[in-house]
Length: 171
Image 1 (cartoon, rainbow, N blue to C red):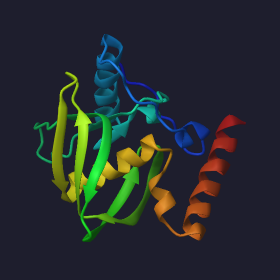
Image 2: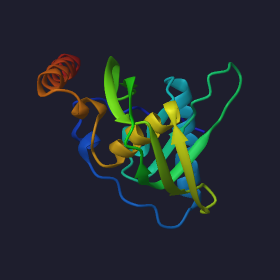
Image 3: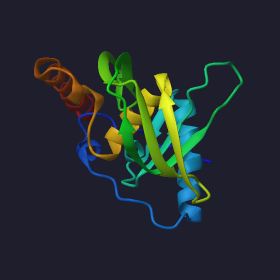
Image 4: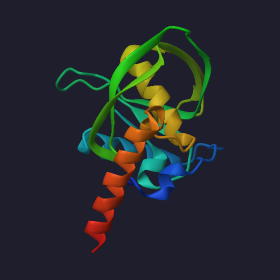
């Protein structure tokens, strides 16, 4: 398939709300394949379609850590239907905010309803890294970045840094 360019902060596309996917078409399947190629090439563990400029509610995730082992998962129209009261802190990063990491507190476990690439309704309960990834990627679908979970001061610093870099790169 195709490795697509990533949308990088401060691009306003990242703040768009993504549209639900209706029918699973060949175009959606191609999008999913391109998303996996892009995510693995980056390399990353999760990617929302908006991060390659497509405002559709599609997420790809692979949290496998073993070399040569893949656990590719597709979430179409994902929705968190339950989250635990217990919280967990992870050091998060984002392909759209390269080389920046920060600790973010999120619910430890979530239950997510979604469709798979065949259009079948599914529901899973996730914990640990998968839970964090799902929440991070669903945030993307809603125009929310992980830096929005930080203090205003930290968030403003990151945005300023990336805006400055974008200006420099455009010159």
